[in-house]
Length: 167
Image (cartoon, rainbow, N blue to C red; front, side):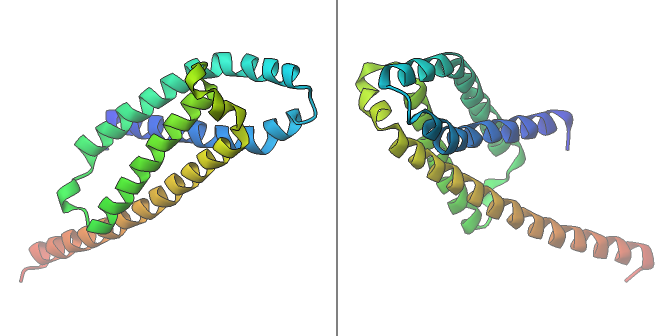
């Protein structure tokens, strides 16, 4: 694995931790903690949190897209992957796009999405579900290439043994 691939992998994993961890924190801890506050005070706190979060969120989503596209174009040989891997990747990509959209809308200021923010508990729960789908698909995908690598390494080892010891 070369240095760029390693950096892209860690950027992708780090970004996923931030994007999947943030709705867990917000839905399970922040929103319940603010439930007892009066609406104006709660809105002011959420706005103070969202102001720097918008910028971080945009950068993390951009890094996720760049590192994900790099991984698909350079590292993964899609035609060689089994159909189940391709299906899981498609589900993971759709869930990631849903997560990007929900987090962007919930942190944003656009008035056309004010109804999303008014029902933020419901939409943060939906983002949690997207995050869980992403993690489950990524875990299943990670196991599949390891099995293929094991088969490939076994065949390389057998070929080396044959070449060393003769036919």
